Image (cartoon, rainbow, N blue to C red; front, side, top):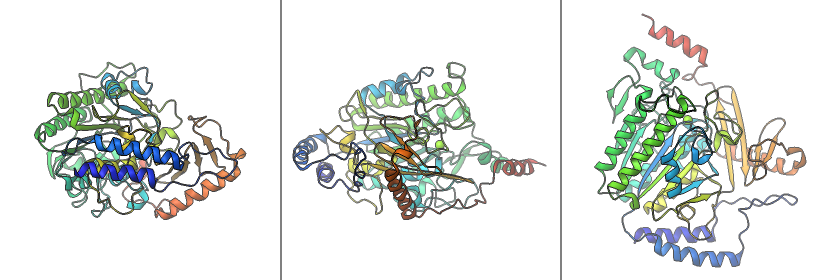
Length: 489
Ligand code: MG
């Protein structure tokens, strides 16, 4: 009953409030297609949503949620997103049985900022995590006062588990067990040299269980298998109560590698092998849910933290750009939602949605109506569950890539995407999703307005005007020298 009431509230809010929608573009610009609500439409939609809400949740038990977050998986790396040279039969089936989103963006094209936004529903600037990635010796992290995905479902009786890469702070007080997760298994860091080098003297980068070292060094080829086994055990262990599992794969971040059963099989080479193993992992998780009779009680989301790494065979095709850029290829990633009987099957959804929506959506599904202050995300559950006529409340997205000396910034409003640069770049994503034709010169007023909106967002979220030097993340040459010095006798 509690859950049902909360969904009615959310449905009403979506119809009546529409939250922080931005005004339509100035005259002469085509309106973003999400900005077309009218009073008669609202009345009809309100009735439809209320009817939907009264039938959407027939049970008092809130749903289990499994959030599978890959690391640096590109928009074009799955067969169901157009890859011709990587087989992903399990994810393709997941998409057929659920909904595949074609316009899902992360908040930033870099691990730490993207994960901070995912975990809190806030722009990375608001949590002080907009600039750079956290390295092992960093003394910073996500503040304990932030409410995380685990903490938003916990009051509703959820068991909460975190498996995999964290990257949101490494000191005691900043780790998963300090941020609402009952259990943790994984490597807090990346497995690349800047993050493994500091551990060389102590026997290699550790895999932790809770706060205890279970194994070292972590070996890239073993990670997907280890994390999958842990995920299956977590599901089994918590089968009789609501659970939230955050499964943050190490793959396909560099240095990617696959287990022997998958190696040498994909036409895309080792990268394809790695993605095939992630596909198999997801298939095993869905199969276990079916076998335990939990499929119809479990929402499973499969996504990525940002676009593919440069100079790998990962691809964001047909989008432009990669991780480390604010082109769509850095920000837009696969997003598949699966919940038999609840999330519509076989649907392809082109609504504009982002990472910021996940926390408010989980809160609504879990039935937690106490939301933290300062959220930037919207409850997406009416869209996710296919409420008649439901549209995404999101119209805008500010994105910053701030790493070492490099800085890139974009602001999207509906179909329009501005890159704040000299000269500015403006793209019409509806006509030109590959961001190939800069139309800034034809739309000076729109460029000026979006530039001001980007500045306003940047300033209001507390992002510094330039990237500060980070003593814990020296440039690669220096890091290499330091590592060599460390490993010398
Ligand atoms: Mg990443």
